[in-house]
Amino acid sequence: RLKNKMRIPMLKSFVCGCSIRTGSLVIGWFHLVSSLFAVLASTCFGVVMIPRLGLNETRENLKEYIEQFWNQTEYPNATIPDTTLDQEVDAIILIVKSLWLIVIVFAYINFAANVSLLVGIYKRMRMCHIPWLILAAKNVIFALISLIIWFLYIPVLLFGRYSHPVNLVNEFYVVVGYTFFMILNSTVWIYTFLTVFTHYREEKGSSG
Image (cartoon, rainbow, N blue to C red):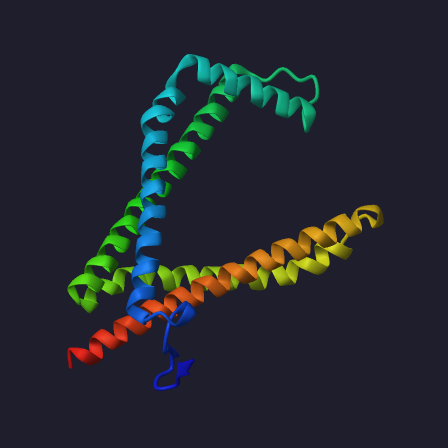
């Protein structure tokens, strides 16, 4: 179901024979709802949890966790200076805040791109497809790179230095399951990208 008229293949129809426009709408609405949940979750986390990181109770809990971690690894039964603990806690809080900021920025960017895609479909404004296509292309590339890295890592996981014959069967099932998931993820992203890209090209052709 491909028309080889350009380097990036174009689809003739969506799943179950639905039109490309219908498929693009399904994709747009699905991603809009999922991105809305991401926006709400990241915003709620920022409102509820981020302020708690500065509380003395939270800092003391983090210090206890760090002491337990150090005692179980490199420094058993060692007394850690308070200044070192404070530095470690500050570093953890900074990392959490930075990761939250990155997550919430990407959540809002994805939400805006999904809104733009739906506006472009309903209003027949093909340029509104571009933000979504850029993000989808990024996800396709990331999924394919992750899949390649995973395939390279499989022999190490199954037959590497830390593999154990007793756990080989369990590890094999994990590898099969995770490989299936990654292939499915890559396939879905490629198919959704091609669907929306085909609709973009159709709108470009109809507009002359």
